[in-house]
Length: 303
Image 1 (cartoon, rainbow, N blue to C red):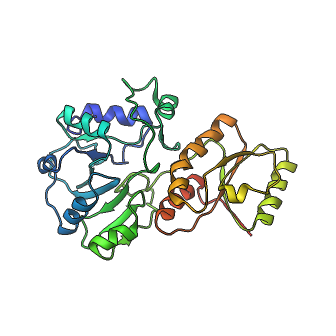
Image 2: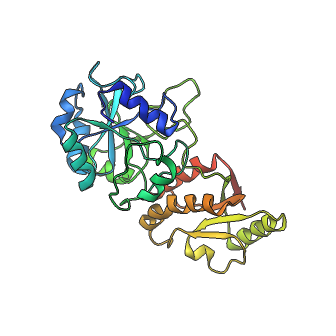
């Protein structure tokens, strides 16, 4: 929606069922569009934009007063800005001639869409139209970094890793994502349950023998189980579960790309409970685990 149009922005919140204190990201097609609504450009933000735009990086910057609809930023004095790296998105923003506020095209709290068919499932009767730009590239949302503070803070890990960012601007901090009930989140994905299918998700950490024992418990209770894991873990397990592979443990890029597709598949299969594999929290693995931990809501089974 037009980031300057209060009524249009309100329709985003209504279509998604999104809490009104959860700010939206503003998308641009060229950096000069920001001058109308960004109050200042910290040097580190400029370096990041030069390196990673267009791409999956959202930069939080000081907002010019009354330059955008107030519900875009949920009343905050900062705004998240991104230049997408997709020809369809860029063409749409250029044609619109305005900054475009845009969240992921799903019902709030559900796994994010990675294809047009996912958007149709969630929003077909709630939006004016759906543009099919093909499957997503990374498969996860953008990294969100707050550059309005002296030391930049990663508020949401994503397609650009902490390690990549630190190569450009030096040390950055990782936010504690436990935003309190009374606090406004500075970025999407910080405060509310996100990325969750209908069935409860449990992160399972342990050997293949431990996995088998936990699977047997669920199946003995006659519950329909879903398992989201790499092919290496799935290989050799004995189960009647609905399985969704995230690919190979050798490719975190593939795991990230398959994550939401796998979680959404369990809704179609109508499983009662979901077991998900745990991954190393380095580089892109940090973003994958951020999404899985949000989906699980701190439910974990460890050996």
